[in-house]
Image (cartoon, rainbow, N blue to C red; front, side, top):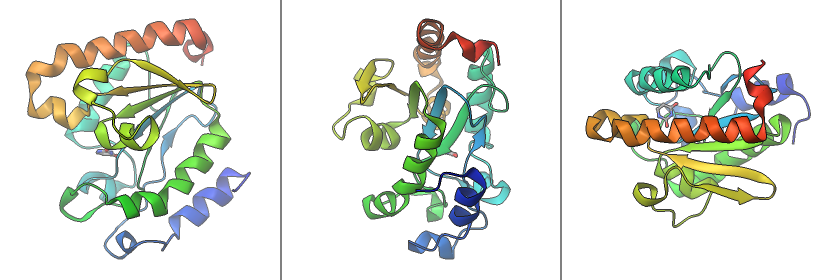
Length: 192
Ligand code: URA
């Protein structure tokens, strides 16, 4: 556990704990406000993220930014975004359980430093790892769970919404629910 962000970031960028380090271009540590009360967690970098070193910068990321901005959230202002695995799985396959296990301590350290009040998991992989292993995202997205004093919710992954645009309204509905929860639990998010 690193108490200091610079040290955490530096060590994370040098990580060679799993084979994904051999094919990566960049370690995608995270982006946003390290004092945020709301943290978003995705599954892992894709091609664009690997090349640019920032989470959610491809087409899915653009959609995510739109939905965030619609409820006055901004990746560079009042939230923090990270992933379960920090290095791109080849061909965008799902990160393997052992890769997730080898990487998860970086995320745990990030969560300990940020101390978010609300954690939003984007997609099934992140939700299964963070909220509960048997989560059914199609049924349970938008529901808030409490775990060790932190509220957690799953949302549809932006890439899944791009694949099936009919799901946009239910995806957006979860952002509206999130805004309500933020106003209840950590309204200071909107003063940042
Ligand atoms: N998908 C994710 O889950 N995370 C990213 O950073 C990009 C795409």
